[in-house]
Length: 250
Image 1: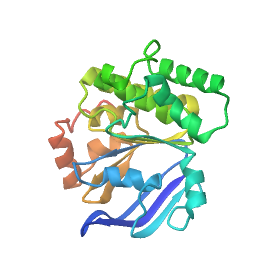
Image 2 (image 1 turned 120 degrees about the vertical axis):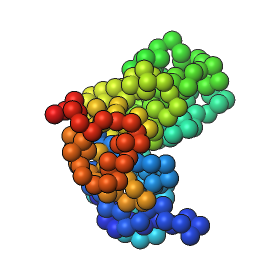
Image 3 (image 1 turned 90 degrees about the vertical axis):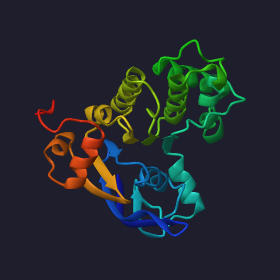
Image 4 (image 1 turned 60 degrees about the vertical axis):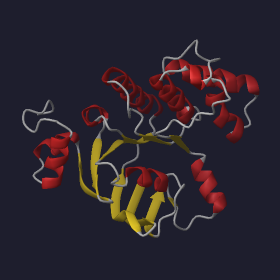
């Protein structure tokens, strides 16, 4: 479904991605973890076509993004849903209008169908009754849930969630990760998820990749991380204050 080979991205002379390689199987919930500044956000932007790499190959759903023209790129982006880390809600719109926006922009559905689908998505993330609230009357967790509902309202083939749990309390963080896992289970889409809640991410992901200085240095199922001998993996888990022994998946 998603493949990257020797992908390099440079900004102001600094490599955000350094000959990165990664493969995400179709239908997977694929987690990305790593220290701040390791390139996770850039990688997500490359996958959804918001950033074109300096070199390498990026193939998403059969489309080579490094060669795609504007029309092909827009067609692919219409098949993707993206939840940005800062939620990126329109402050002048209600929660319902925020969720409806992609349907109004990308589809020819009649207004009544658009509203019905947006209401259904808000209910799915536990926000029935919040349709008329503007973002400034929502908590941080509620804003993230509105952003999640908006990202999946078009039933995208690929859902990219950029650290939807950043700055949230553990209970809210877990609830959002469970919602993402539920959406993937229901929609059978492919999900790329980054999260600062490493333990929570590993509990819902099929596969996890650890990024370090612009590269993927370890990839596999969550249990492999507890057994990995690579110093960077052990250091990352230690910094995240996660145990190495007696992992719950053993």
